[in-house]
Image (cartoon, rainbow, N blue to C red):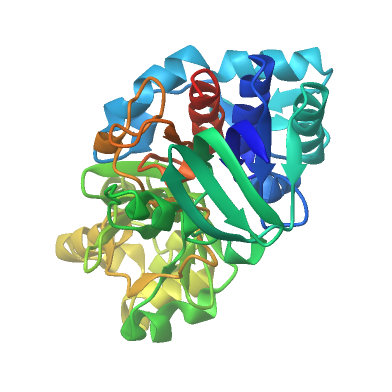
Length: 388
């Protein structure tokens, strides 16, 4: 069967692209190998769906060219998507720092996108395996349910993160089959694993969460970090993982809102035990892991200026060299993707292959934690939908 547009991927970018293309009176087929649509939308924000952020700019993204996202974000931004939610009567709220979540749950957005597609005539073909994609005048899509052709093809397959939800590398393979460049791929927004030495020291702290400043390669976030039985997680760690590379170090400020040196100096005449003083900020288990017991058992009045400097350095500049990220099964996104130099930032169309478009996570645009990746999906999918 022949269509104007075939979209591979029934996720956030694919569905909004489909509804926009169909609104322009294009015949649209969406193909996906999963049995239901919007798998990653469903788990976003713990099921509450952190669908965008009110404070958004290219600085919230990493890429070989962060300016690439500027055009799409400016033409379909957070207010455009909330306008769509408003038209469907879907309620949402700001949780913190501009992050918008649904009041009820992510299923509302999935249902909204499904309704937008179905009322405009989009056809959905789920549980369908793709065997081959070629272009011979028209694009030809061979599947286990037949052969389909179209004048435009949109690859909105997502990345490698969440393989349990059906993520595969098919989008990158399609790009490469058409001679397009794909940048290095890595897990992003992902927990870290400790090196063996740190694992022995800190694995007993599993479950402890503290607010910290986390730095790596000039990037810094002040968020909670979480100790796990394998390493470090939590929002701050997920954020900084976007800026970390193999062999790199991260610096952790365990007291981002307090100068430890000034605090301890001000208490220098006290009989309070150091361990008790620090435990007013952290669980004692963490204090025991960070410092030698001989030191923590000292009264504050016995601390030398050298002791105070060392303690302050440990608290404000705890340096960790992770063994590596936990992997795609724990990653929220994929860093890297189809090279932005291969695409038009206005249309998402390939510069080499007319009619071939890409949208969403499959492109080398990766957002920080906080609704930025779903907004990129909406924006890039909408941009492609305007031109297919």
